[in-house]
Amino acid sequence: MNQPLHRFKAELFKTLGHPLRIRILELLRGGEVSVRDLLRQLAVEPPAVSQQLGVLRARGIVESRRADGTVYYWIRDPLIAQLLDVGREVFGTQLLDLQSMLAAQEREDHASANRAARRRDRRPTSARAAR
Image 1 (spheres, rainbow, N blue to C red):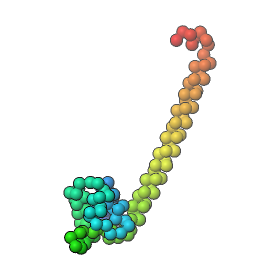
Image 2: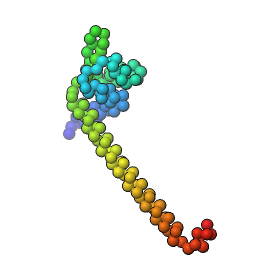
Image 3: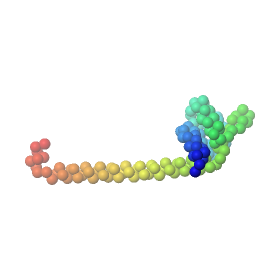
Image 4: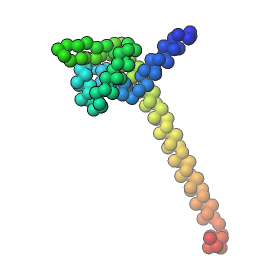
């Protein structure tokens, strides 16, 4: 792969690497949404939403139009919604892996505690009484 493509991909993922931008894109994935509705659903200060919409628009990820004093935004390329889906799947897989590792660790901790208890119980009574 050539360098410009790597740079483009890095910029795309960097642009998507902000929690508020992801939340905005999740709301826009169903189609056009007014800024007023975005603000209501996000419950975030208007300047923060405006700033993140500006970043997304500057990168060509969303487009906007104004009608009757209301600004509407939508995702320009439907593949962005698919990318969000893939991200959710990757997160789900990693979460399952983490849960599996935690369960294995708990089983190991439980087994270690049982082995320690059995060793303690096998000591002669006088050794236990001396403690």
